[in-house]
Picture 1 (cartoon, one colour):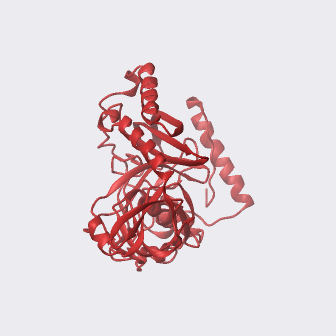
Picture 2 (spheres, helix red, strand yellow):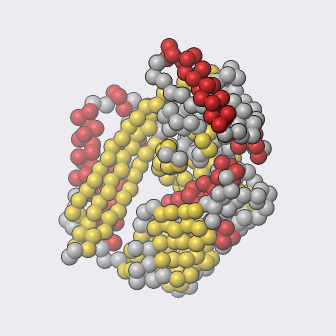
Picture 3 (tube, one colour):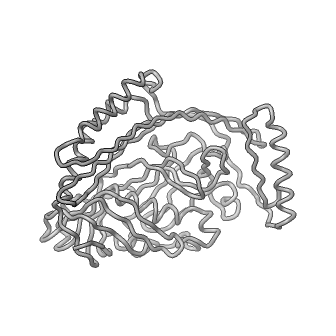
Length: 402
């Protein structure tokens, strides 16, 4: 009502009308206490549910003992000499959504999600190193036919063991190659969140006031696309809007923010990125966010570096989308000397300023790869994917322990 929201949840379908009345009352009462500008919600196209992912083997048709045995086999594949502990997680879910609003929109869908993760810890003479891999998808149990979980577990253990003898990285400003996973994390955390229109309206985005201006290298194009059958897919968002691909950055120019109906009504733009966890209110969220392919090869990137670092994987980090400062920890790295990939590095990180890094991209590969994950914001967690090809950054701050 006006500029104020009222939210009520109920588990009683017969009590929906009363819940709506209570939501109106709450909005009216809150609006009297704190006056806000009236909200004009942007119009949306009524959703037509189509192009749902095809599920071949329903996880519910697989006996629980078979699933338990799979977890045991995954764990066993990582339990190699030198591995002190293994942690394996199997997860499956099926979410059914029915959406109705006062504009006459009625739509629904059911989506299953399934996958596993494994963490292996290696120990030698008091030195511990960990490695982690995960594989999640909107899929049925056939995921474990497309992906080899035992091979993934074995490789994870090998990575943890190899890090025991890796060198500590030397910090400094230098050229870096980011692998698709770490570059994807960068584009999600540092670029995607800054492009969310609620952050822009709050003045908490380095992209505020920069639409249609250059924010990065002309080699950088960034999309958010909920229509892709990746982990962040949805057939309509949680305000009933049809999913659409949003061009966030095109050839280095900031073209669009990500919107829900409220922010699109205030700033202009297309609303298709409103997402909610369970009964929480829908807020602006990413879906499948990625740097688009270029035309460089990894070998060509190596040829451009006399001394630098190749960074692989992600162990998390932090970003301030308002100030534009970020810091991410890589799982591992490799020293690059004289255009060749050499010593394995541990305890290595990437940090800097979002706009500076975007402008320092001098090569983009053609090997785009997506990675599934979970994104937290305002106390809500939703499934997403992020990705990128390999990218070469001319100058970046590398942190290390060497």
